[in-house]
Length: 304
Image 1 (cartoon, rainbow, N blue to C red):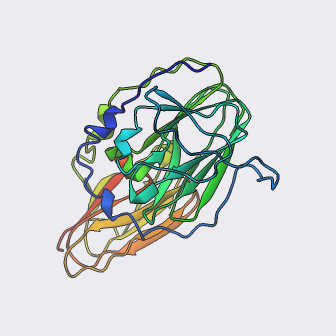
Image 2: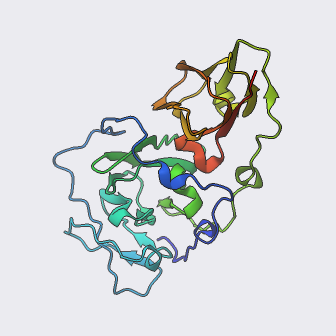
């Protein structure tokens, strides 16, 4: 049996500092087709996701035989409860129900071998990025950003605790937990690492004497642009080269008369993109899937 626990993520109270561009993410991402980790069998048991709201226990049973998802109008009402979905073959988790930046339920206990179906229910873009999992689990999540109507599923075979997040909305506490098997779960109240909250761009690198220069996107599987801040002249052409998967280059601010559109489509290792900055001024940009982890950059274009 899963012990009764209460859960309140510290992220809901504060979130990451300095991330103010989160609300502008929708609509600037590549269209991606629905995909699943595992094939869906037509004969699978109906997904059971309705929460018994009358219970005062911190572990809430899901009623058998229901397929309609009920979500609270206030996401904090059920945010403390570990929903007990053991005994079910398939469980559904709503992604962004009622246009709220939450997973519903956000904490669920299941048996090994249970398939969890994630269903996107809002227009805003969300993803499912694993933060912690058992060493031998190998869950890759679904890191591409998707909108309403997308579905993704995964079968959890390895006992343990799986923590995941929506990258664009981690700063406002969009996190979830899946407890698989007979394990103890102690809800984490740790705040994000200081490194995730800090603008690490520092002093820009001077490339004003170059005709061409290169910025690496996601080197060594790190969620950074390298270098993160550069100074160039209007003669310089900048090239971004992807060294890991699931990144984009999305402008967040630029001079009034500039027309830089960036590379908003999410791309993988091997992709390249270049731009010639003719208008002097400061250009800020971000990687949308990893803005919650501080993946930002700056280009300063000086007059000749």
